[in-house]
Length: 251
Image 1 (cartoon, one colour):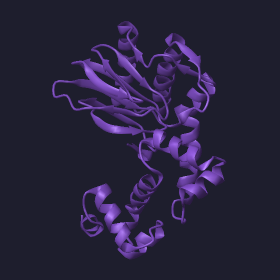
Image 2 (spheres, rainbow, N blue to C red):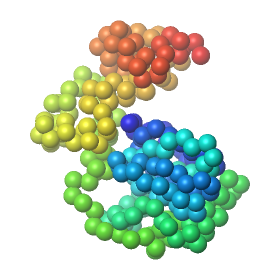
Image 3 (cartoon, helix red, strand yellow):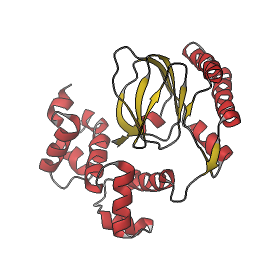
Image 4 (cartoon, rainbow, N blue to C red):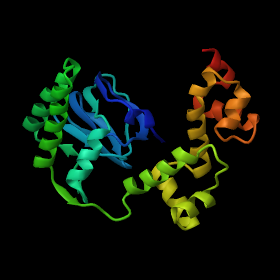
């Protein structure tokens, strides 16, 4: 499971099978089932999105969709600026149910979202995104958000790691900097990111190294992103990317 930071950098629109491994992002995502019920895993809970229903995936909600050959759905990842609008509006509340079974409402939202494929006017696109969010807020069932919300922890932790990933970090150091007990931080980190601290940090460093490989030597890249040796960089790169830094650089 990984944090898809690139999803937060741009919007996404696709009509197709829309399958993915377990991941999360800060941007809001909506899926509308066009054909063939879709299996899904949302925050460790299995479910099914039936034809004519839509799924609202809130910020930092982990999700996974296995590939289904006959399935077809509309998937839209909103620009991350709309996450700010969502959070400012719902405040300390959260949706009780992420799957909306009202097919008339779902079809209405689908008809608006599908216009994003051909609408270039930024004002019209803004209107579509806000209309959809407004309808979800109007017809959704809300409850008070639970304490120790995963999203709050994820934002705090990821913000720190994004700034300091190239430094010599340890779980103990980060836990202390963020004001957590070592054991509690370790447990919450694994629960939130589905990976141990060292594993996730290595993956983050590898991802950060990719653009640097275009114009720097591999050895320089390894040290620039925080690896203690070239060998450890090679091993982690191979595990994350399925190929070596040299082979990736050639491509």
